[in-house]
Length: 533
Image (cartoon, rainbow, N blue to C red; front, side, top):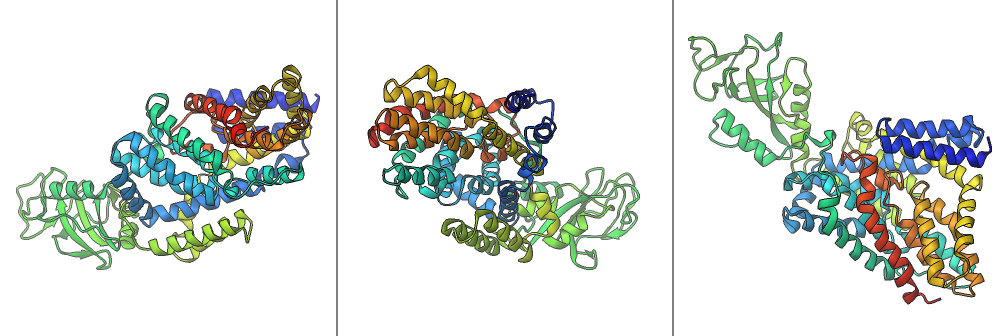
């Protein structure tokens, strides 16, 4: 089979598999890589190049750094600040979160900003009683707009700036992109805030169903155990409620509130029998008339409320002899600015400094930060591995070779030439419209960098044919290249919110379509006003 035809067929089959939701996305992505090799489109090293590409490695590193912020309570603290500013209304939260991610994206990267803020947005959503699916796609889309605020917002900006200089025009300045980025950000936030409630699904991802509000949890435990004061929850100490399963080594033991256990590292706050009686004051044992002076004899099904250092509580709850009602890790993460928060923030600040300065490649900055998180004791190694959304990493790695095949086989060029042959050298605005629509279409299936690299020579050639300035064509190309709103595979940022939001493949285009129309209008009508033909 001709390599170009094979590429089109593989792309079509992959899109069908993605839309069907019957095959795991990571499996489809790996299938794409294998299909490109088996059909002879790419050599084996090229077909597997996505697994050695810097982008998946960077994203895995950022997942670890983001989880460190979450585990140390930085996310919980930031969520309180965002909630304080935005309240519990979806539209206000959307506006605040979108502005935050846009500013961070302008100086770091889309992937870094989204990876760091996904846990924050989930916490804010749960606190406000809103499905995270109503906020995470707007987060990713706002990051796209934020990438057009500065030269460092995305590699595409650097590419088109260099191309402008090579074409004889002036290179775009560091903040010159903001002339179009700020209006796009305003329009994006307005669109997602206005229509997100109706166009996005109300869906909760299984991975985030275990969120715990420490205040509500403390009040519940006080009522359940009839305590006079609420349990102590601090960055250093907390409580855990455990049930005794059958054959637990603690069954038949005599206990009472105030006793120590687990090597005298934990204190029993209260006991509650399986029949519902509490052990804070009375010594009644469920199911009998017996009385044990100032204590209890534990039975299967009884519950213990135990207090102590978080690290000890986590080891205690991990035993097979108890079943934690609420995992200590979940409650600990909800305590604002817990132990290790300062170290996590310092590591984050250093990573941001490296990313902004460009002293080392972005992937190196991410890997250094991820390694520092473990070496500084912020996250144990096992938690660092668990923090990575491996299906997301595999999805991105598996789809990168499709972009390579699309460019190498000439498939992208054929599509571009066909569209331009229909439009012809008509008015500059009509040509911009055709180029923008084609760029947006390509950007849904290949990376925005690959899309811009394919379309850039066509845009420059068209500008020369029309005897027009290359600046409006290049800036319009930049805008259209960032308008990747229709699929979760269009950009890594779109992919990163897929699982936390519980999204399906077809959820993106509903809000992405009106937003793409807005961005196209900006690219065709507004850009030439700032950079005339």
